[in-house]
Image (cartoon, rainbow, N blue to C red; front, side, top):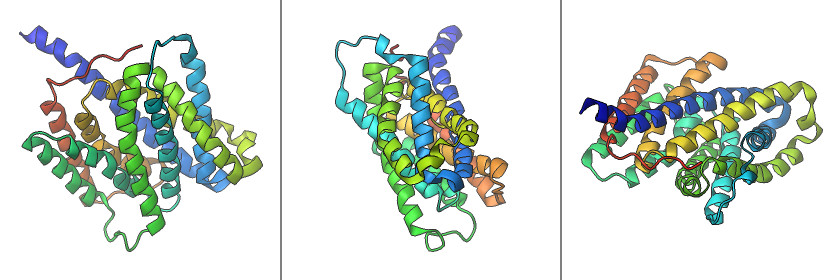
Length: 295
């Protein structure tokens, strides 16, 4: 029946929609972070993002009000530490290599996760199409020999943390709902703040930088982490991981708009390939939506 089908698709469409908003927000925040690097470095920008993001989430969510009978603290701490390390090494990579390339390399983590969870041949086709798109997304003439090798290692390390973030975030979200975002970001801030203060010193407390820092915290942490938690608790791990294939496309567009990084025709072709793969993944996952998020 049409009405029944529309009802069954509603949770999937909600999850996909909030994930798209999260990815756009994340990449706009990354562009802001790159503008902060000269003043406070990648470490300071990470401290801004996670420290202020945690404060915003704690004020808005007040997670201590919700009493939980039991919870997996190991998953929650693993989720939080994966956020902290992922953000730090990604910003260290972004300080050395372009935004689009950094995100493309970082995506190897969720891409590998999606392939690991594949059960049908069509899933492998979508993942292969994403992989082709990521290769085409690299700027012409840019290979690992032309890129800063340390930046490449940082980006790949961020990919490993991204995969852990997906797996552990799903477990933490099942126990703590959206409160897992506030607690996890707070744990990440405990990891990142000492590093940022040690690197940037008093510059980290400069009032003129506060508006950019708040924008970074909201766009890169408070908003996208909350939306991603909603999405990851409603989608299978392989679907969530493959849908994140849109991340390099959002990064390339953010780089073009905010950092004056223009795309070639080949790179736009890559974006089309990635979008087609993501759409195919959504269609193949129509009947496998996870249980609703606990609040």
